[in-house]
Length: 444
Ligand SMILES: Nc1nc2c(ncn2[C@@H]2O[C@H](COP(=O)(O)OP(=O)(O)OP(=O)(O)O)[C@@H](O)[C@H]2O)c(=O)[nH]1
Ligand SMILES: [Mg+2]
Image (cartoon, rainbow, N blue to C red):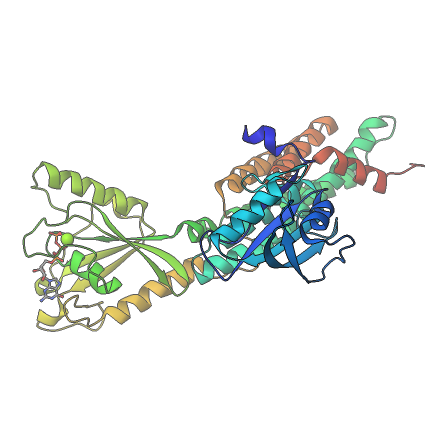
């Protein structure tokens, strides 16, 4: 059903674009060919000037005034969707919004928008590519400063420019090859072929470097996972409480208190962090605790950083992590500093009880976050979908360099370009034709 409606691109769509619930002002957005009719009937604006703010009463079909509203009109194609668009800034009360939406529903050719349909139309009408649309979605969902910055870069087209640039290069080579395939009596100059292979190799290297990013962009979207791990009673639960200034987890002197994974979401210097307290690791444990330990190790395996908590009163005797976790980034933290006889300078000593050392622990965590996920210039991969397509692209490019037959080379380049086009949502045939006509027009 969603698809059937979405493809009715001739419908004029409307939706409440501001958040649900009561507010000072609510924004209702309308897009499509009936916008001018709507403005005329609803707001009495027959010749709306684009990008001009009108203050108007909005009237129901029976003439009742529904609200007084600020009315903005954007003429196609200079609008978000590329269609005629209007924005109504009405008073943000539920019944006002409902009354205006009902009046819009009564207008001919108008219907409520589907999820994401404004953006979808913007993509279809070439106002933005898919990555920019996804960037806008991320911007709306951004909860921390770093997430906002990353999403905005993408919404402003950083990835689109990068991928389109790569794709243009490929289309150019393809067009060149196609010309020789179409005119087999002409030999392709061998030095041209060598140069082309060199350029394709360079492009492959660039894409591989882009892929080799420690998944920073994806992690910034999803949150950076930190697992607090250690043997029972070292103060893991006390530490999560101290780090979050909240009573997140139960603390007790009984070893084996924590069973389930307890998570807290935090904003650390603009990075979204998910901090997890886990069950204490030990060999001898009853059934429920054993399950808790299994979950603890699993959490640690998935984590981006492990805080390995040691009992400070036992210093320097320390326990070791399960071998499965040895490859992970680990920060060793000695807890119970308040009852340690001495605190060696070269180890991280904290007290969950008194708060000693907690700022230093945060500083170390921040350093790791900055190192692994700090702002990179340009766009970064933010979705598995991009990664899959880029990997397919690299595969095809490697094949393309490996074959000497022009048809096969062109075919691999086509596959590589198509993989990039899948990310941005570009339709390839037209663009290839564009390049062909631009570079190889009459007379060749
Ligand atoms: N003196 C002192 N005691 C602490 C400190 N942190 C925790 N404790 C005590 O150590 C005991 C165990 O604390 P928890 O936080 O429950 O330890 P845990 O590592 O979560 O234990 P399990 O959930 O059983 O694995 C409690 O009695 C705490 O009060 C600390 O910094 N100093
Ligand atoms: Mg605990």
